[in-house]
Image (cartoon, rainbow, N blue to C red; front, side, top):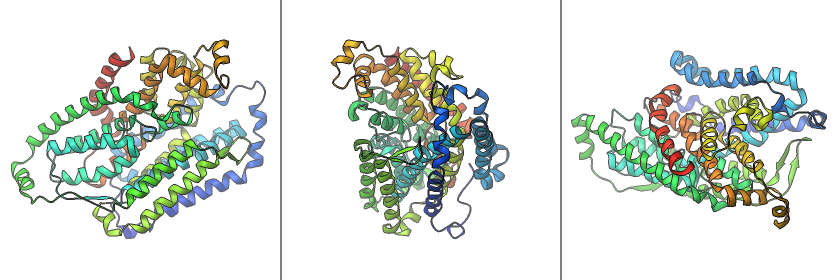
Length: 510
């Protein structure tokens, strides 16, 4: 993505929080100023009128494909242009989709756009920024010497932490210590790639805090601790990747210049020490607010006729913004400088994903229409556990893995054959909690396949999970040569991850 740290801190706005808060306020103002317009969309939603996803043509995903190709190709063919204008390119694709979408579908389009920004994008960025800011204030001091045993230990620790503090939190906490430990090395691209595989994705498999799809499942009646059922496939993939990483890192370590290696080993050892540890309190606050929003029901705020925002989500987002501001206020600037902290990575994610979330609307709507959409053949073909694993995972590699998870989660629920007797036995009828209970009881492996596919295969591309992008940007700021979008897929995820997922398929889902 180009080096985003080329300008000095003095050339940047004093706090990008102001920019993002301004964007959030503008988006909220837009929502509040359009209630009458969006309310008129009710006519389009009533009666037997086919859903928006059932009517959208397949070519409407063209701008989404365009923004993906821009992310993949511009850094290769026009890196200087991309470095200065990636936000404008993302905005251009968003506008290219939004204008004909609004003209053709009018109130339904307004409704869809307001929904994806107010319900999905703004909370998404607020959570990422809170974790990025808080974790960026924690400094690991001491001697971490970049040898294979140290590196594999760091990746193993991060893989465990990701299920506790989330893949974003663990990634932001450990990526800079890993880079500092290996700063002396020439060959270090593989360190960042395997970090993305394990810490930014696979590690978040065991709790709803780990990865957004699992949290979405928690919000839709999947018990909080059910995700521990993913422990066996999580352990298998983690061991395969850690063993593979250790072998590869040992190979590259032996290729490093002997004088550099000896100089690193001769450095005086210093005990490890954590500084800025008060940020762990804020990190705990982030986890508490996320759990609060998924456990408490305070009613909804009706912003428009079709846009209802749960009050507990608003409380969560305000709390997350406050925690980020507190972290900035109470953490000495010198600590963040020592940590190599800059706003570039989160800015890149914010601007690019603003375009991605706009252009992804038709893809998610078409998938959400199920067999009635233009990809109905794909949804209808998902029958076996193996197909759930690969289709959910394959789409999660390029689409937002949370709504992709929800699409096939609902597909699995819709495929249940609950008899009238089973409905009568359920305490509250055949609502979502009862259906989820039956799914877990009768087809638990299907839910495992959907969950594992969404979380594991987010590692297949840079856009499969938001931490992937941030880790890549931080690595490039630190001078690590990262593969291109397609280079990452062809050289790393296809030859390394896909064979691991094939093994998982045969062991658990066949």
